[in-house]
Image 1 (cartoon, rainbow, N blue to C red):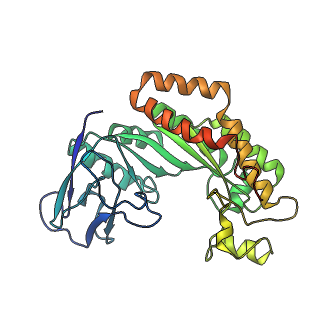
Image 2: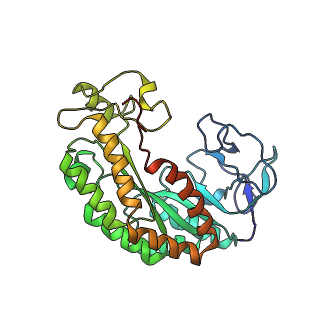
Image 3: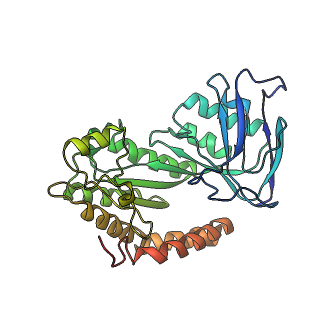
Length: 313
């Protein structure tokens, strides 16, 4: 697609000063989206962090990838797409529609992706699509209602089904995230989730074992029940840097969770119907072809090797 120029404005659209704190900087966090990079050449994509106080509204700024000047604004060039790392961009419908309307009002022509819950209505998604939405990353987590309820997900399986149907109607692609090993999980519910993933058929999918972070309810659940295999955070990853699991309980070990994710990933992606669908997508959209080629190469290096790759479990 053609280059798009976006202005990062510190203040209100009418030119007046914003009524609260607003600042931005290149994401230089060690585990940030830019990795260890802190400088970028023209035409390259860089991610920025935007900080604002609660009294600064969504229409007070439109931000994008690129470097920023010390003054109040910066003009940057985006060659492909933005990823809005808002925790859940679509959570508030009013805010979401304001966001889309502001992009359209300013005539910004750029494709973008964002995190979303599985409860956005068709009307909102159609509006977001007009404003450039290409893909939503959604946390489906499980296809079993009991597991969803014990996670306090506040989501019904049927609502998820409807969301996926509506997203297809709106023309928004979906990346489905499935997390296994939650309270109430069994070997049977694992298979329910895998079958659900195939039924929903998102454009891409990831399957991860549960990661319980200190300070969360999930961590207390695992710790109080004696399900943690270690207190060494280095064990959260394999020696190769792949996701591991430290939550093991009777009837469903941490190793079984990881191996299920490996199998689920393989079964999802090697379906003939899925491969054919992606071939059609790539043939009808050059940018999608580039993404599929890059993603396929990366995925192919891991999908048959598995997380442990024959190493120590």
